[in-house]
Length: 188
Image (cartoon, rainbow, N blue to C red; front, side, top):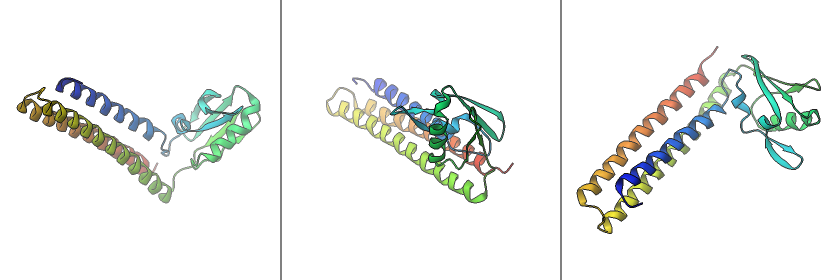
């Protein structure tokens, strides 16, 4: 990277990716409602290959408290059911030979607190990632200044812009985490 603008653009792009990853990670944390995103991280051993469950079955949410999976290959019902049980989602799938039903039980207070704690861990991991991106950008700006490719005032402005970008990204991250925590702690 040869200019401060390129460094800032790269940092912004990486921070946006961190926010998108946080949203994806939060969508897999269970709330009281059924969502097919709950199964995003479930991998099934499909003939020796760990395969995402959404590539093996149609997923539906017929009602707020139920997810159904209809495998394309009915011989995979048992491995899919086993993978869901082993995913530690707090659900108990059942099947009728053609369809897997996953009732989503209401969350008790203890489970809500566990999920909120998990959410805080995920959010903190993403905060650390954003700070690392800021550090990388600042190091690249310092390197340009040290090599005399930019003036001192441009160096200072680059650091200030990077900090502003970091602050706004952190605010968005905190806002997303607070909204998800509210959704988890909400009793329906």
